[in-house]
Length: 77
Image (cartoon, rainbow, N blue to C red; front, top):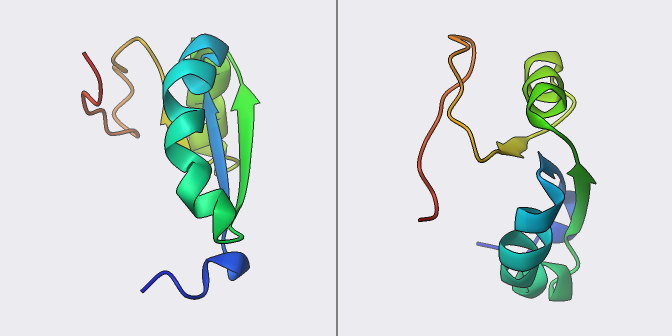
């Protein structure tokens, strides 16, 4: 299932404190398998714009979006 993760590059954009404290530690198993993951810090507007432009695969924000082009889910409380 995850045998070919080296061929995958994932771009994640979000608030730097959440990426550092919550997201990055959860990515260690994927990094150890050789997956390429790029974390990019950004504010609410940059996160929204990168997702709309297709420059990020996943955006993580402290605020729910009202943009109908994007989908929003609660991932951490």
